[in-house]
Image (cartoon, rainbow, N blue to C red; front, side, top):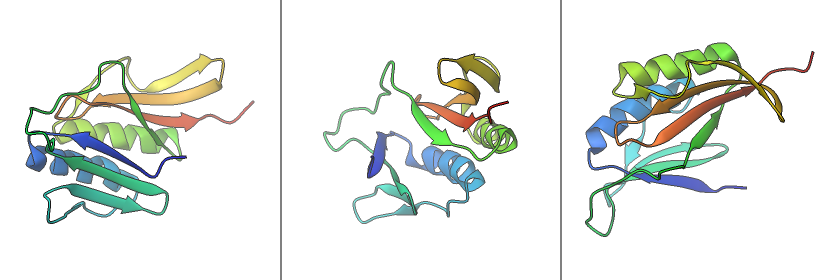
Length: 128
């Protein structure tokens, strides 16, 4: 459904450290910087980018917005969360764990990146 996701950041070095660590847990290679200064992580399923806003205004996060990353297991979600906290991210919401809802059991872990963007690691638990 999506071709790419782009987020704004005023500190691209902090964003690169954070996303190299968290996306590295998912098997992504280190982000590359293009001639316009944008950081780009390419995967077989899409492109993730971080850039300074092109309008010259300060970057800000979307209040109410969350970007979710698919995880292969609860352990991978935990490793993603730990990598994020160790590289400038901030834990938010409840601690990583199973939540039950209308979509079944989900293993969720939430972080805010160094620019304040809210991220989620999501693993769909097998039906019992």
